[in-house]
Length: 228
Image (cartoon, rainbow, N blue to C red; front, side, top):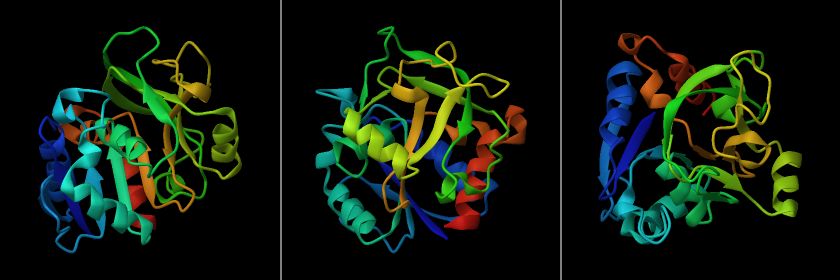
C-alpha cells in the first residue's frame, strides 16, 4: 500500500509518521505538502498531529482550506482511505469528513501523557485486528481533544459501530476517572459511516518502535495494513 503523509505549516508529527510507515512497517510513503493539488497516486492519506497554522481560530479550521484538502475530500468520498491523528482528527471534523467536534479539554490544560485505549468497533479496519480484551497504551498530547457531538449524532455513531476507541483504565474498564479530557462516552476515536475515514486523538506512531519500549501503536497500524 502507498501512503501519503501531508505536512501543514505547524505539523510536527509528520516525520514520525513517515518513519514508522516506511522504516518500521515497510510501506511506500509520499510526502505531501499542504499546497499540493495532486495526491501522487497514494492509496491512503494520513493527516498527522501538530499545530497546523498555529491552531488559530479553531484547531484545524484553517488547514481545512489548504488546497490539498479538496483532493483529500474527493479521495475519501470515492472510498479512499484517510486517517487523521490528533490535529489530523481535528482537521477531519472541521472538513466534515467525520462527525462531531474536538473541544478544549475539560480542565482547560494541555495534556501530554500515556493513556489506555479499548477498541470498540468490530467492523472498521483499524480495530478489526485488535483484541477487545486488551487495553492499549498510547500517548496523547493535546489541548483540544474533548470529543463532542449532538445527541442524535452520537446515537447514530453508536448505532453504526463508528466508535473506534474509548479511553479506559489499564485493566480495560471504561470510567470517568480514566477519561483524560472529558470526551463524551470516553470517545478517543471514530470512523465515518463508510469505515474508510479514521480519526483518533492518541498517537499510535509514538508507540510503534521497540526502542521506545512500547509497540501497542504498531498493532493499530498492522490492523490497517491487514484489513484495508
